[in-house]
Image 1 (cartoon, rainbow, N blue to C red):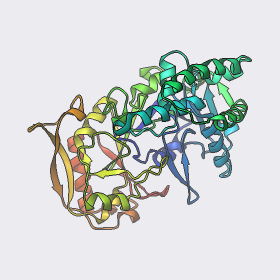
Image 2: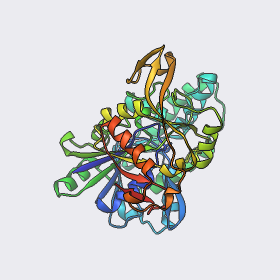
Image 3: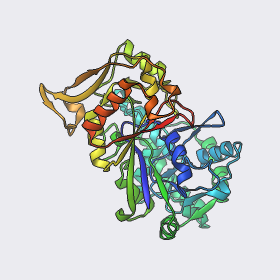
Image 4: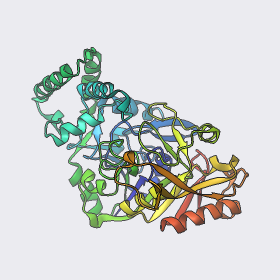
Length: 420
């Protein structure tokens, strides 16, 4: 049995904490897509740590953690993360496994990412420059190197062949930056990666499913960044939706049980691209400060706005969401009134559907106003503790979305989550 936990907005929904909260109820936490552009923030013993590639169950000794084949893996980032989690007592050599079919991010992928983004000028998509896009391009172009290739004596030869191909592309970009230090770091990290548990991921996970073990598939980024269904071209390079679990881990559709979607009580976005409810005023700035809305991976200030129920309903439909987690409800404590987007006006006509190409049309959000609660909700422990205005806000979202909010996160702490 597999439950899926994924983001329903443009990422940064607080999934890391939620996975950490659910992890004790599962035998395996599995990452199924994305690369080190994902930053999952956890607080362990009151101390902050950000995971980029290691599944968020790593701090639970009884839980196995799988990096699936749908991920593109940066060995340098992984090594640094392994060293970081070891300081918290996590033993990755015992409870973390890496699929042989996982593609590697090479130093030249990072260079290509940077060169491509620089050439776009004002048309930049807001790439994190981690090499994710070029790595996925090599995967679909059938050129990539995979973790299993590290066990082949010809790995270095195959690496050089691919590097030469990348160099010709970099020459076309007139990219002349010296990346020799990147390569030195890469090969040191590759030696470290060889010491980890490298497995046939699809057999590994299906054997455990057959034995009755419970799996939580952990998504990265958010549904509105999906390569097919997101706000293209301002998207990531992988399938961030439930369908990505199947190809990203090698499991059958019949194995999926619940799909748990995570949404903030408002909306944020990092980088370029459409954002219908974005606030360019003092309220938007106040949301950013109250929510500490700065990228976990990049440190970039996030764009902030009201919750968008058109996009949220769309994401729930695409993913087959059965349960919702609302995060950062406490950030709205100081705001009144609140606004909720219940529709779009597209070129003057009202709709409740996400347009095919949001960048080509003028979108005006249709907003409905709610009273704020002006109460410190971070101290709430039970549903009965939540102010009536919070319960009204959640009830309206339940009604509009068709999937129930079952948990509310009301602070960064592990214990700051209320079951409804």
